[in-house]
Amino acid sequence: MGKDVIIALDFPGAKETMEFLDRFTDRKPFVKIGMELFYAEGPSIVREIKKRGHKIFLDLKLHDIPNTVKGGMRSLRDLGVDMTNVHAGGGVAMMKAAVEGLTREDGTRPILIAVTQLTSTSQETMTGELLIDRPIADVVAEYAKNAKLAGLDGVVCSPLEAGRIHEEAGSGFITVTPGIRFAGDAKGDQARITTPEKAKEIGSDYIVVGRSITNAADPVAAYERAMKEFTE
Image (tube, rainbow, N blue to C red; front, top):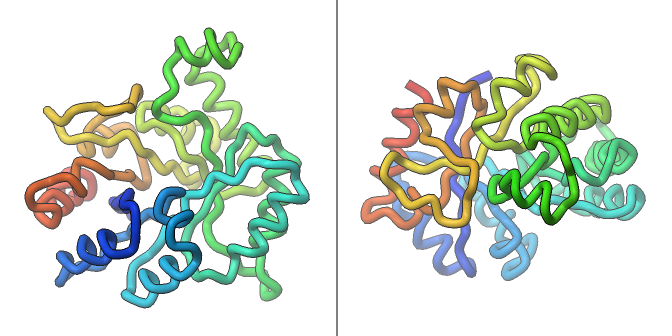
């Protein structure tokens, strides 16, 4: 599987998003549309960016009862996205329902992955607030195995956990890892982070990079740096 850098389009609306994408005259980077942008602009923003030639990871993290998630995925399946996700915490039945809802009549579907634990979640949060009294790496690995059992293609996890997930779920099980910063960048609200180069060493298949690219003085140069460090 070819490695790739996904840019998180964490902008408040279409104007800022399109101005950012207009900077990329020679490349069509893989991009992530999350809750902020999708809730502001709706499905039209997905169609517009797809029309421009970008691959899209629609990051809405569905998490509800199985029937509701199945219906939600049915509504998303024909948008033309390349990847989308659910929360693994919803359980195997919910994830199986997501696969059913996302699969088109011809049997095709976008890549479907499950969020294990958010990269902003620390061990202290797991134990003290969520009352999950297990090491976070163990929880992530179990959630990944549940996602594979449900028929999903991979998971969203911290880059720190990508290697273990490949060991336990197989090398073909996709790991998409946010929490990526260049050396020297502020960590922001992330707890479990690393650099593009380190994520490559650990075994991430895709890295999601937001502020280190979108807030850069030269976002195109920052993207090229991320691609170089992660893929070359």
